[in-house]
Image (cartoon, rainbow, N blue to C red; front, side, top):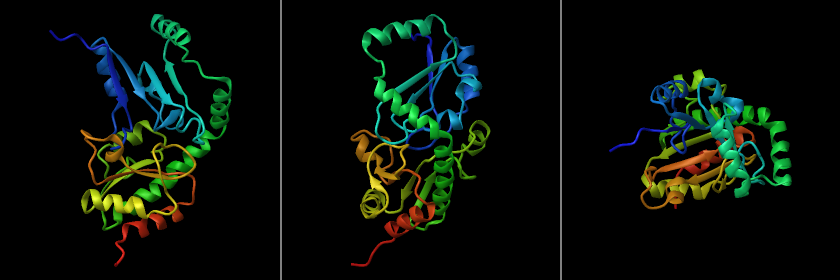
Length: 245
C-alpha cells in the first residue's frame, strides 16, 4: 500500500545539469494532493529567485555557498512561509539537537549578505558570457545553462528568476578522458568542489559523485566567479584546444 506524499522537494536550477522546474506549477499540484512543497534555492539565492512568492511552503539554502560568498563558512538556512505547528516542531528539534549557528559563522554570513546582490549580478553576467562562448566552441558537445535561449528550461527560468546565476556545466567531445584533460589544463580556474565563491572553480562531477552516478562522464561543472569574463574565456579556450605532442 502506497502512502500519500507529504512533501514535494524541488531543486531549481538543479545540480549539476541545471534543469529548471516550474515552482508555481509544482507547488499548486503538491497542495492539491495535500502535500508541502519545499525548494532548494541554493544556486539561485533569494536575489535571483523567490520560491515563497511562487507558492512554495519552505525554502532551504546552503549558506556555505553564495550567502557566505567567500568560501570560509559552513551553515544552512531553512525559511518557512508560516509560523505554524510544523515550524514550532522544527525549532524544538533544532535547539536540543545543537543545529544552531555559532556567533562567528553568523557574522560571516551577515558579512556576505551585504554584497550578495552585487555578487549575484556579476556571477550571472560572467556566466552568460562564458556559456555563450562554450556553446560556440567546436570541442564542446553541449552546454547546460538556463540563460542560453536554446536551454529547454529557458522560458520558465526567465519567468521565475531575475537572472540565471553563476553555475553551469558543459560536456566535452571525446568523453571522460577529454573532459579530465580539460580540467587538468586550466590555469585560472581552480580544480575544486563547491560553488558560490569569488574564485571560479571547475570539477569533473562524475568523479566526485562516484560509482552509480547519473552524471555524464564527459561533463564538467563550472562555478563562475568574479574574475573578468575575458580571462575566464581565454583560460577555457586554451584548455579546450588539444596541444600537439
